[in-house]
Length: 279
Image 1 (cartoon, rainbow, N blue to C red):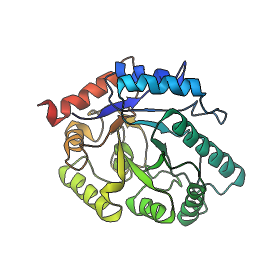
Image 2 (cartoon, rainbow, N blue to C red; image 1 turned 60 degrees about the vertical axis):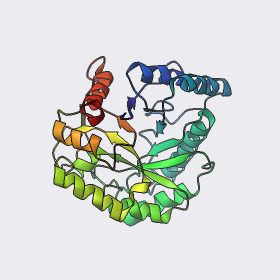
Image 3 (cartoon, helix red, strand yellow; image 1 turned 90 degrees about the vertical axis):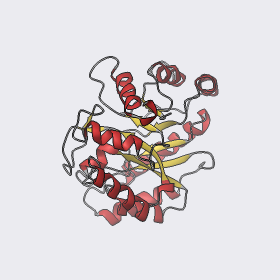
């Protein structure tokens, strides 16, 4: 059975994410631990953490992933932003450990003009200073390549991995892959992409797929997600991704648009329908 879920809200309490995920048919899921546009947040209380764990023992949503906020940038040359970002990332790890979540997904950040090497070095230094990673792992997500963002190709992701002393994994976002120039919409392109990932990084490092279609075309550098099967990757492209033997046992988490009520449930149903296991 394909393991698919979506990003869900924690409104009203972090533990409420679990029944929300179950309601839309998800078997894995993702949350923000707080408002993604705010620096201010607290690690959940023990009571709230226990509620989350109790709900998830019943629902068995695995894995749940915390996605970092939109504000952090561990590749920045600006010391004030760097320190705030580092503090926020550490609190995300503390939150994950408290509520029993294994993965914290981060974006590698942007060097904002100082150059790729400087950004990678800055990020690696930050990751190496984090604490409490015995039970929680950082997942570094590939980017679409817009602006001065780092981590938009496999070589850069490998450079980051080589510089960090902690055990990190990789999240591949299909929209970001496509928009950064990897032609995963075609059979030959997907095969070439995954072979390159195996050669440069290693498939053992790949822990999660953010399954999103793309509003824009190949190598556009534009990060705009689309509903499954109706974007530029398309239904056939999504079918191949979902059923590729190198990916099919990974969790697929959707970050598709919420244009109307029930969109997440429909996208999850679409992924299940496209899965060969549904034949």
